[in-house]
Length: 162
View 1 (cartoon, rainbow, N blue to C red):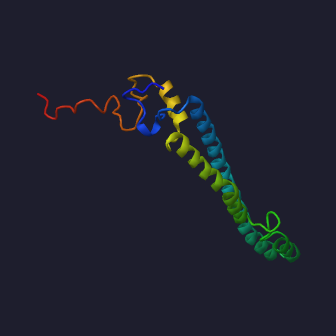
View 2 (tube, rainbow, N blue to C red):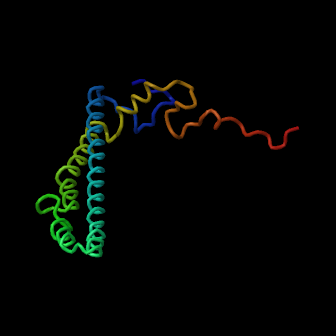
View 3 (tube, rainbow, N blue to C red):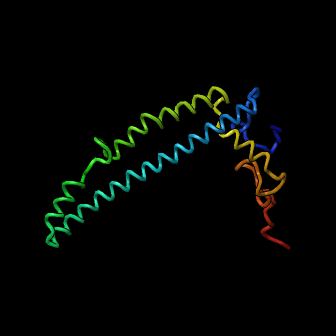
């Protein structure tokens, strides 16, 4: 990668001796972890939606009783309300097992690999992609958030024009 003066900050530059193939592999590992993060979010969505449905069953039972359908209210209360979603598990237990068994080990290993192979520098693949796609001197293609944009480095207008 060509390191321009206006390029990425040090934390987003490939360390000396790190190959392009290593950067690509780390990018793939990072992408896989990002996908796992999304899956975990969906799992939390599943957890919250299932919990919301279970709480709504209280209202359904109450309304069935009020409408004179005690038998059906009993069935909902006994057969569905508070039921395990898989044998022995409520959704919080599934989330905890996923975190413990898959998510946390994956996240930890990804950090170790990036630490060992890239001095802990994350998103090198993306940073290099950004650098390759930037248009030099274009105000909307600056490399870092701390760089001035076209209007930021212009002198302030004279408050007392003649």
